[in-house]
Length: 242
Length: 233
Image 1: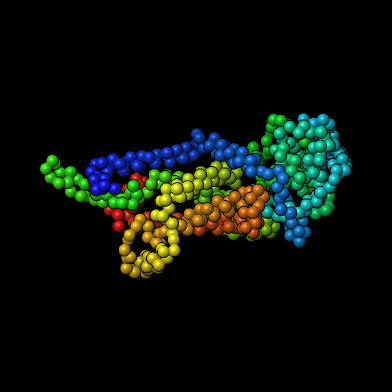
Image 2 (image 1 turned 60 degrees about the vertical axis):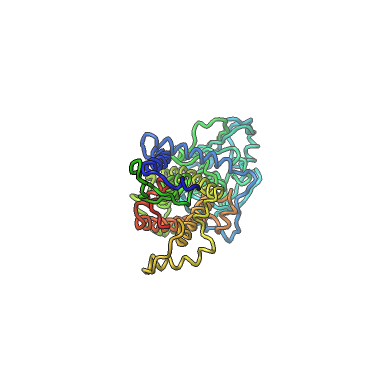
């Protein structure tokens, strides 16, 4: 630096300092998050971006870690989480899964039809949005096998489900076709109990707990989502892949 | 421009020589200041919403039976409920990550990291600074913007920032980033690490704030204008 550059007039210094300070004004844009008018919209955008990024991070062929039987959480210590009642009173004899939407064979499917598909048993971690986690043994048919059985349109983007307790959920097709995504009818090698979602629930080790709907009654394959999910409608993330 | 001191002069009419009223150093480049203040807001939101998320299950043990570690007051949390807090957390994490990447990239490519990076030759200078700050020892001579103890603190804080992101991804995506979760002992332990790193960062922030107050107005102003008036070196 030349000697001349090393001197600055007092006024000039104040001017330069002020200019440097003003350069930081973009930081004030963050204040929009504090304004009630913008807050909800901005947070919705942020959550939407996270879901978008999550969908891109999801790898169809990447499996969730499976565990030894010795790592299992005892069945009695596997939490029961329902949004409404632990037992919505499904009458098992009359139960069918109503299939609709972009499928070749819509209609009523019995539990026997689901159980006739190859059965998979896996010890996987169940992670709750609240932060706790347990390792459980889940058994059932691959959802991908069932989608083949009903002739689901492979170009469809979503699966939506309704439940006996009026809970509802939806899944992206990539997760639905994941080999560890099960239509689950047993836990710990025993028939699913009522509190855990009998007769049929979703077990999706690559998703957080609230995506794994219990007491399924309806399954729809669709190109457009008309309903997203119960907790999503309260403000939770839709994709929430682990 | 950073690093070398200039003289601030006062003109005194045509014939008289201007007098030097102060010295100043351009200490903090624009990108560093920008990242510092955005990150201040982002960190505030991440900690506040993180604590609200923690409130949903304030434990690191089993769900059944649940033994709570501490009941963090709702008044010192952001988001109102778990879902709201997750919205804040999952929004501001991108801002936090973005400023982190911008900061590290800038420091690396501009060479400005030398101002802050703690290197082996700083080690001998740490103890004299500790003695000065905590045990009324003599003040070691000031030769550059940051003394060895400061460099150690800032370098650690940047390391903690990186760890907060890595542990966060292990909690958020324990399957897609299974190698990260594995390094931390699985999802369950990743959540503990994430929480511990937050407290370490808060400990740094506390020390940082105390030091900012002790070092006075000119020092504080330098993080806003970039210019530090009458530096000690």
